Length: 449
Image (cartoon, rainbow, N blue to C red; front, side, top):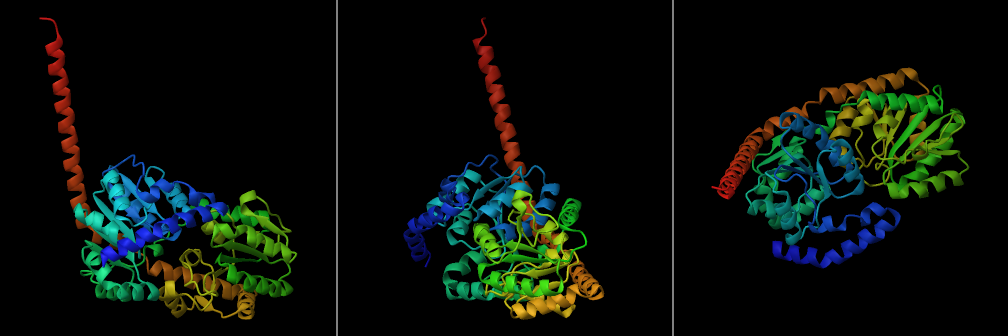
């Protein structure tokens, strides 16, 4: 099965390269560092911990775990691999001292090249990222790998079960599998994982920095501190018409309402600006430091600032949920005490939405009319708005602690890693001492008698 998979990946590789080139026409970062996609990464600090986080969301989930690891094991080099430019930029911003590179295409030669260059002592993989040739390269060198914050959406689970013969051996070889919920643990167990551990979702352990809160307040002051502010976050193109229709209805009641619009994908920024201006709205862009009290729609077209934009808002709509995209993470907005509204398609965060719904902290809508009516009801009642926000915030706080549980579950792995690192350091010191002794002997031999 793995041979057939490798042949398929090999045949698809030219098309992957063409896609990267095509995507690079609108977003140049995709066509940069192509050599890394084939395993030719310049690893400055080999012999440490390898963390793979596909994109910006997985980097955010990994960040609190990695921060604890950095505090406990500051001498351990860190390699982070990602698949997307946004993930790469976020990882570099959070961990400037780390090696940050693109994960190679899952070809045996590319994965072997990266592993040979990085010499990782262990590998942590985020959420759902299973690459057979990557795991094979690690296994051949007896490098332990673990899944953290592991989950499996319905579609991903069905796909992995369909090709269980390909994935099960590598899942069974994982040293540790830390899952978000009991349901996800059962799915990983069905795929061959040995005794998965339910540690919770690390995204609950949210640290809203003072700088993010201050940035939100500054933005609110710039755009009009007394205005009501509705944020539509991580919006997909198919959702934009619904958002704009709802916004037009809401402006009939709240004449100075400001819409903070945050597209999910950066390559869509230009199209979204055009669509908003075509409806005669006054548009300002975050990237250009625009905006004032006359701005109708403020577009968050920068990376890594969603939390600050939430901090400037009164109510949040979570995107990817009116279009069938599985929804996006509502936890940052909840942690900031924002009332939450989402569409019916939140499969990627089903347990989170069910929990928030049981706590009375989220409203689900099916179309632009229901969206406008719900946001209007929330904005029109300060008491309701405060109650919903407190419920959301309390629920997130109640479910924290996943980072501590994950670190505890990984402790045996890190004991092995630090023992190996100590042996490497002792070997390096012995080789250095031997070289220095040899240099002294050679120098003595060259001295005149």
